[in-house]
Length: 572
Ligand code: ATP
Image 1 (tube, protein in one colour):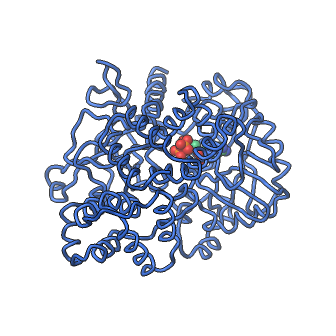
Image 2 (cartoon, helix red, strand yellow; image 1 turned 90 degrees about the horizontal axis):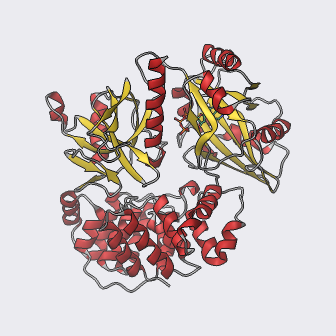
Image 3 (cartoon, rainbow, N blue to C red; image 1 turned 180 degrees about the vertical axis):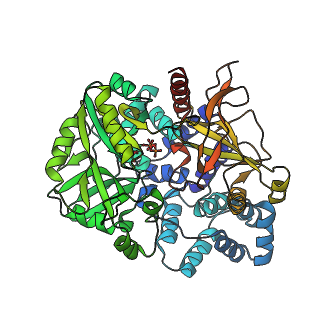
C-alpha cells in the first residue's frame, strides 16, 4: 500500500528530472510499490485525473475557491493567501508555503476517495467544505499536489507514452510494451490497463478485449500528394468522400449510448438526434465511427465547419439541434454483439455496416466507391471538390482497423493551392516572445511552436508564429498562456531557441504556411549536425484548438512527409 506522502515524494522526483528514461524508471519504482487494488488510482493521479478524461468528470473548483479553502485550513487571512498566489502564480506553491503541518499519513486510496467526493459534490459550498477537511489532514508537500490536481494543473511532465513504458518495465521486459500499447489502444484507460496487468499479468493483457463504454483510440490517416500516389500505395481500394465535421465514435450497450469525440471526450449529451438514431439500430452492442456535420435539409448542402462546431456547447443544445440538425456519415464498424471487428478487413467491416445502417434522416453511410486507377480516383476527387468537400479518403480493402495508429491503411488527399502547403499544420505552443513595436504594448508578439515526436514523447520546435491573430485574440492568448507559464523549459520540450516566456505544452493552434524549409534553428527532424525543418510564413488559422490535446498536434514524421510531398509537387 502506498501512502499519499510517498506518492507526493515520487511526484517531487518526477518534477525534478527532465530525462524521460529517468521518469520511466521512477514510475516503474512507484508502480511496483502499489498493490493490485490501488495501482489504477496511482496511475490516474499521476496523470492529474481521477478517472480517464472520456468519463468527463470535472472538479469544478476554481483557483479562487482553492484560495478560500487554503485560507480556512491554515487560518491565514484570505487576502494574504490571495496576495501570495499573485506573487507565486501557482496554487501548489501557495499550499506549500501556508500549510505547515505533519499530515495524518493518509493512504493514496483515502485521498483518492476524498478527491472523488469533491468532484462529485454538487454545490460549491460542499466542495469547499470537503476540501478544507482534506487539507487539514495533509502535510504541505501532499497539499501542494492535491491542489494542483484539483485545478487541473499537475505539471509533472509525464506523458502517456512514459507511463506505458513504465508499465512494460513492470512486466519485466521492454519488449512487452507492444502488449501494453495494444490494451491501451482498445480501452483508452491506462488505469484499467495497469490494474489488469497487476491482477492478471501478461495473460490478462493478451486476452484484453474491447468493451463498449471504453473508447477505442482512433485510427488516423496518412496524407498523399496525388491520385497516382494513392493508387501506388493502396492498389485497388475504396475511396470515400471526406466530410469536414467532427469525428465521432459511438458505442451502444443495450439501451445506453455513449458518444466520443476525436479527442475521446464525452459528447453524448451534445448530440441528442444522433443518440436517438443509434438506439434504433438493431444490435445489442455496437461500436461505429462516422463524421457528423450540419446539413441544410432544404438544399442538401453541407454547412461550413464553423456551424457544425457550434454544437460543442453545454447549453441550448435542443435549440441548436432543431436549427442545425446533424447528419452522421457512418464509415466504420469496430464491434458488434460481442465480436471484435477491428481485426477484420475493411471491406468486410463495411459490408456489415451497410446491413446495419438503413436509410434515415440522421444516419447515412459515407459515400464510397471501389477504384483501381488514378483516373477513377481523380474523377471521384474532382466531383467531391465540386460539391464543396475538402477532399477524399482512400482505404485499403484488406486492412484491419489499426487503433491508435496513423499509417497508410487510410490516406487523405486534399485540395491544394499553389504557393501554399496542401494542408494546415497543428502545432503546440511551448513559449512566447514579448514582441516589438505596437505588439510590445500587448506583452506578446509571437509564439514558439512545436510538433510532437511520439518516439521520444517530446515536442520539437518547428516555427515562430507571429501573425493570424486579432489584437483581442493576442490579449486572451497571453492570459491563457500566463496561467501555464514556467520558469524553465518544460521537460518534454526540445528547443534551441529560448522564448521570453516558457509555457507548458498544452494549447494547439492550426497554422497555414507557404512551405516547409530546412532550418538549423529548429529541432523538428534535426539529426546530428543536419538542420531541422521549419514552417515558412506561418499564420494562425482560427484560435486555440480546444478539441486537440498536445499529443494530437502533427508529428515530426508528418512534417517530413509534407516536405517530401512538397518537393515532389514542385518537381512535377
Ligand atoms: P487527423 O484526424 O488525421 O489527426 P485532422 O483532424 O486534421 O487529422 P484530417 O487529417 O484532415 O483531420 O483527416 C482525417 C479526418 O477526416 C478523420 O479523423 C475524420 O475525422 C475525417 N473524415 C471525414 N470523412 C471521413 C471518411 N469518409 N473516413 C474517415 N475519416 C473521415
